[in-house]
Picture 1: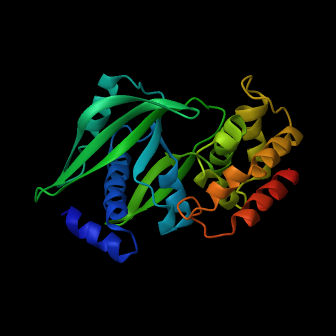
Picture 2: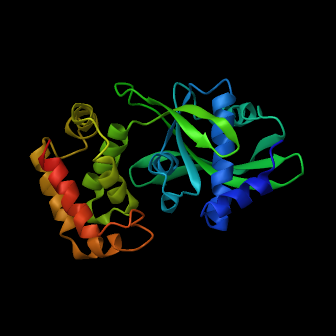
Length: 266
């Protein structure tokens, strides 16, 4: 039987703070429910949940879930149907609370919902889900098994590949430059630079950057020039040095230099 409170206490023992422990448990249950539902092939997981799982780093903990629907509507009634489908695990109920919100952030449009999960003892936790629509069908999604704390079988789901995540993060940096507020992305990219296939990454750069009419950079030289300009902005680099951004614990100057060196090798 699923005991949410006991799961939270276990995550606290594993090094998570109270808020992040609650989020981790909620995320695990949502991921398992999606995996067990009939819509498991209509969802690809992205963002911080994937990075936390791949790095195994508690400091990369995130308090929401980012996912894209694959060939599934983002209309409100479809979202409500999706949430109902998550009621497929014994001993818990899943419901949407609050309003469905339009979401517009830097280089992202989607919808945000809040999910409430309640176990058989009446213990409840909430988490937010940011929902988008998958449009990059030229990029294969990766089959990935998330390690779920209470279930040895884990949760097998589709996720964005390392190459796609890197290219998406780089595209955002190129678009917004020193005005970008996605500081953790820099450390994500540094980590991912050691875990990408060069040919697959070049393909993703073509899709996300070179062939996008909104982007100015048409080759790797243009990308390197733009990234160098951002990394020379003192205000931007000072924000990179904050502990919240630097989840890797690697000197930020080593990270920015390492990223430039990686791009030069392409």
